[in-house]
Length: 264
Image (tube, rainbow, N blue to C red; front, side, top):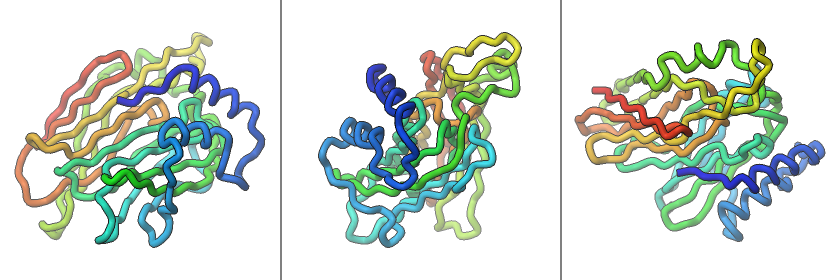
């Protein structure tokens, strides 16, 4: 599961605070540090070429606490299968927003979710193929305050019903096409950076850490994430057609509480 050592977080916060506007140059100090930590010296090829990775986000967010993000990976016939992909938000307090894997039960390498953006920043997706090769895309996003924005409700209200999940399954008109699935999880996903406007205190960090969706013994989708994912996390992914079986979700949060839900 995703782990970021405290010294790395602290050093990245310092770099973020000291950095100037980096919209003109995607090779930021933060990215160089994160890249070395995740990938060492391995080369990252341009995933935007031939549309192999599509990263869809607004250029300027209407609400920095709820920024829609969609990722679509399209492999050519000669490509090795993609094993996982990483989402990096340079100037967030914890830049590694998530590591996502798609198993045998997945219908495609598509993902939609909502993220928080703390400062104007580069957002990156790095896809890792089964042979270890890497592809990447990046976009500069204008948004601010998403991680430190105060919640609209008290923590007590936000934890009410915590762990409840809702499913939305949309079978396609073509039965041979992937099935669209959305999993919605009730959880405050507190960053620990937002002040409660009534108590003037900071809620402790408390967020969904791991999501795993299976169908029978097949992995469909898994995610190691942190508070860069918005409150009440939601994930849209696809299911491989042609097989019958219930979906099962297991969600673990940062307090090691585990929540379970199944859908027919």
